[in-house]
View 1 (spheres, rainbow, N blue to C red):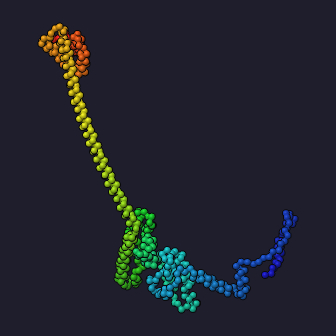
View 2: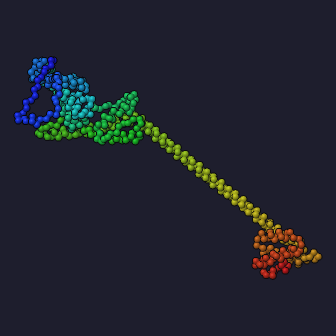
View 3: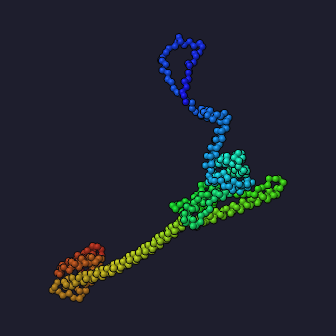
Length: 449
């Protein structure tokens, strides 16, 4: 494209401008520069397109709109979640209760998890493809029955109450429980986990405990089964109700249909509860974790029993040991007492013998010295009796064996008459001083005189 030079004169000064006298230049103008200017932007592109194709404004806008629609349809065609079934396209719109609303809108993959935005987007895509005007423009012989199915599906799924009623009976979202063979091949927990994840959508209580894995604790597993055995479902089955007549003329028929629907709902609710309980029973029966917990519990009980039996054995052994120890101590005490008694008896015998010996020594002491008479004299019977009676009397007054032994020791070393007499006299004086003998000797005939 050749460059075009554009002349831009300076603007005319306004009237009454009188700044020349007050004008004061503070700088100079720069040197002029020549630049090439090219037209850009959507408006220029639209102008160029019209010039190139020799179109008017209205013709260009119409053609652009058609191309935009075609582009949207091509993009939408690539985003539909599943191919359209020919049998579904031929459905009778009157049988709207029997149709799969999610499949009609291409949302089978999302189902109850589909958001309102996804439903609206899916509806727009389906309308662009199956609108009667669009089909007529393409020469298709398809009637508007499927289009009505699309509209009905959208009406149901965008209404929260109607959608909840439909989700309550949507069998397309269910997952059949695995067979024993499938569960053993794939893994029991892995096979059953998706089943409970789908069933959890009907729970009134949240959060819903999930099946867990092999590392789940006994408390978690018990919580899971307790929750599902007492599962509180919001399923109501209204969607499958028989249509109630709207006319006011046949009220009895209307009440009859309502009672019939209520009974049918209760029956289906009961059947669904039984179905869920049977499902939980089947899962519980094959749950290896329950078996593991029972084994651990039995092992724990056995361990406790063994510990209890061991404690009882130890207690019995300790009691036996204590009894034996008590018996030994008792026997030793008895033996010690017996030995002590024997020793005491020996000591008494020894003491008794010592007393007898000391008495013999005391009696012999006077006998050896001629009954305290000079050797030249002969002791008659009277003298012997008097001296021996005095000895017996003094011995009887001595109160301890030690004193008796001490006296015997003194007398045993002395053999002369005077020495023996002095010792006996000292003993008599001692007894008198201690008050055991009367002053002057009392009944003594010889000793102490």
